[in-house]
Structures are given as C-alpha cells and as structure tokens.
Image 1 (cartoon, helix red, strand yellow):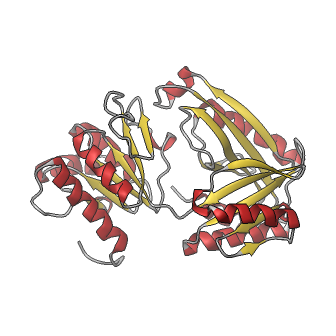
Image 2: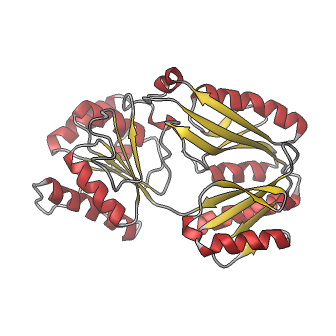
Image 3: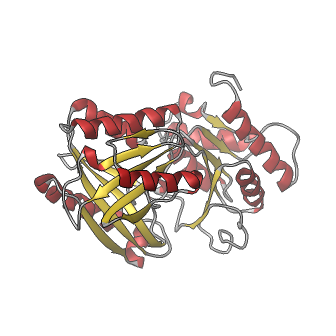
Length: 352
C-alpha cells in the first residue's frame, strides 16, 4: 500500500486536483485512527482507506459535491455493530471526516504539499495546520502551514505563530485536533516518522514482544480475534490493542507502510498463513513469522500454489528472530526484537 503522500505526489505531478478525506475524530471501535487519510480522484477511484464499509462509501459519494463546489465538508458517521462486523471488528463507533478539495492549479497549495512530501522523504517530523472558514468554504494554499521543530513554511501570519509556539513546547505529543485561534477554526495534524510494530496474535510470546518493542520506542499494535487474550489487562504497555472478528481483510483496519514491522505469532498455521499472504501485499519494512522450518515449508508451498513467488517469500524472516537458542517466551521475545533492531539499524543491502 502506497503512503498517502506518495499518492498525493502522483496527483500533483499529473496536475490533477483531488479530494482528500481525513478522520478528525473517532469514538468507539472505529477501525481507523484520527489523522487517517484517503485520496479520492475525479473518477472516484481512491488511494488509501478510512476503514471501508458504509462510512467510506458515503465519503466517496460526498466527494462529488466537494468536486462541484470546491468547498470542504465535515461529516459525522455512526457505524453500527452490524457495519463493524462486516469489517471484522467487534463493536461499532463514530467518526468525523473532513473532505477538502485540493486544487492543483493553486501554486501555494502545491508548494505546501511538495514541502510535506520532501519532509516525509527525509524522515523529518512535521505538523500541518489548516484553517477552516466557518462551517464550509474553500481551503486554499494560503490556508495551510507546516512547522517542524525548527522550521516554518507558509504565508506569514501572526496568529499562526502563537499556535506554532504552543505546538513546539510539546512537539512530540501533538495529536490531531481542532482548535480555535481567535475566532477561526484550525486543524492541527502531526506527521511523525514513527516506526510501528504490528503483532498478530496475543499469546504469551506476543505479551513479551509488546513490552520490549514499546520500551524500544516502536508504536506497538496488538491484534487478535480473542477478546480474552487481546485486552488492556494483558497488554498494558501497547499503544493499541485490537479485537477483530477474524484475521481476514486486515487492510480494513490496519495501516501498513514502509515504516511497519509485522510480527506473526498467531495460534495456528492457518492463521499465520492468512496473515502472511496479506502482509506480502504491503510495503512493510519487516515481515517475520514464528515457526519451525517444516512449518515454513508447509506455509510457503501453499502460498506458492496461490501465485506468490519465491522472491515474495524471500522477504519473510522465518523462523523468526535471531538464533540465540531461545526457549522461554521472554527469550523468544528478545530474539525477535533483536532482529527488528538489526533490520532497523543495519545496512539496507546486508544479506541475512
């Protein structure tokens, strides 16, 4: 899955305007987090996802009005438990979505997004500030600003400088939020170069992995289809603990990109194979699957019969972890997280 800014860059290069949807608020078990974006093109094809289902379908439908009027819309959606079940989630939730028209003929708009793309590629953390005029209206390039911990990009504006000062005081703690500066409403959106570990399976080994990856600074997400395993009592250090109906359709509720590390430690071969098949369709930086060499051969042969190639499977670290003769859950977790560090810190072209 391409990063949203790669998709934005493609539109800018083609000089094709688009609608950008962003989750501003969420409540309950909505599948995507605040700040999640989806790009909608003029032919209503999309890039990215805000969680699928009715909310996403209605967002795409509303984009037609945004294209016609070139004015933003903020829409609230309520996801029923039935809708959530269709996405593999246990409970429903509410989301508030901003749809804005991005005019590629607006040179200031193009410049601000090109700067965002540049910062993303350099791995520089930044915050984007967007001014909203009333309940609706157009958003121009002059209504957007970017600040890093030391830099500023956009039109000079005294009110914005006050907001930037507040942002920089707790820069790393910045969250997606709506704020009022004077009488005007603004959206604050952080874009941090965070590396995330996605642990599929919530058993004893996953518990120990989550403790260590969080300690190492990874944004840690744990996912399982068993609520008695995937809960805050067992994973009190993880950033997110998600209960899903199944391990199918992971793209509906998990964002995997080039800064993602996938750790597959489910409770059975079939589940591991299903997760691995989906993981191989992502740009994840690391994919590891627990298991013996015989299990690996069994899973790999099944995937080859489904059309995956040997080159695809070369991406997978299996048996997972560095060989330190680990036996206990704690030792296995050390071995796996050591491999994550090796991938994170080691030369890109280093042979395994």
